[in-house]
Image 1 (cartoon, rainbow, N blue to C red):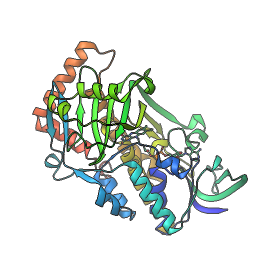
Image 2: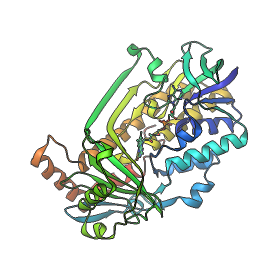
Image 3: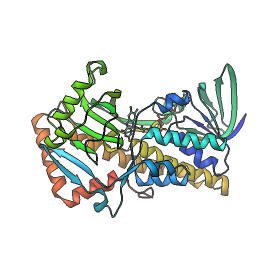
Image 4: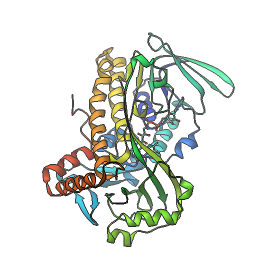
Length: 394
Ligand SMILES: Cc1cc2nc3c(=O)[nH]c(=O)nc-3n(C[C@H](O)[C@H](O)[C@H](O)COP(=O)(O)OP(=O)(O)OC[C@H]3O[C@@H](n4cnc5c(N)ncnc54)[C@H](O)[C@@H]3O)c2cc1C
């Protein structure tokens, strides 16, 4: 088999890259190790930056997002029992974020891909990449009992943190940076109306809480938990009680609870692998970097990698110009490190850290108070939250 670009992984980065390249006439093949339903069953991100929204529009998959998603002009910070609004839009000259679930973005991209007849192989087993340091890379996999070999020009490693692509790069060619946080997030999805029109980020003596949403009838709530916690030990009732405790009195009073339809614990990690290009292999999205979800950056970073990579490959195929390919890694990493910094900062500001004690809590309180009183500080938060422009560091 032949394809110009073989994309490993059908998460948001693989699907979006596939859509942008395929609609420009580049022959792509996506290989995904799980089934379509499994991928669609994963509950993950829900906040899209303006740049991500524009990219989905350019990919021709934004109709349902505009019909069902919701633009948010602000977020609320809750501490000392009081909520304070950060006017994202007012502080950034009209920029805002779109609340629309990653599951829905994925579904829209999958539907567009199959409607256009572009090829995805789900349940591709034992995907392996070969010869990516040569002019003619190969990818092998097994599907329905058959061994398949695909020759291609480029391989896009969009296969997430646990994928095969980064793992295939010789260790000596990679530098990795990592911080693992000493807590996790216990998340609940429920068919209940959100407690507030905007997201609430809460700093509380018991630990962090986030009130998020996917729609007017679907809420996503998180509380900071211990890494030793077991989901089974968290009944719905226990979760709602703990969440209520961490909110201001008005939100605690108006919170509508209901049965959870998904409940899981996610560890928090910051991770970057450098560089992101190895000959004819490119890494994009979670394959190259992870952020703690506090800044809502994971999916958005995947989208900005795809913006740079699609641009680079279109330039290569259109004009035989390799400049975009050669600068891909550097451009991505400049933006990634800014999002890593912001996500780390939001995490440090809002969580209870076991080792910083009362001094750490006082510093957090002082910083939060400064943040909501100083326009300069609020603006810095707002411009990072809505997302730095794709060409910010160029
Ligand atoms: C539990 C959880 C909660 C999250 N919550 C948030 C959030 O609230 N906000 C936020 O901004 N971000 C969040 N994120 C991060 C966000 O979901 C990711 O940044 C985003 O999914 C990255 O997209 P991706 O396509 O790069 O990787 P992924 O979505 O991980 O997709 C990679 C794909 O590659 C496939 N794959 C892996 N290995 C192979 C292989 N060997 N062969 C073939 N296919 C393979 C996988 O099955 C998967 O479908 C969360 C992530 C997790 C794990």
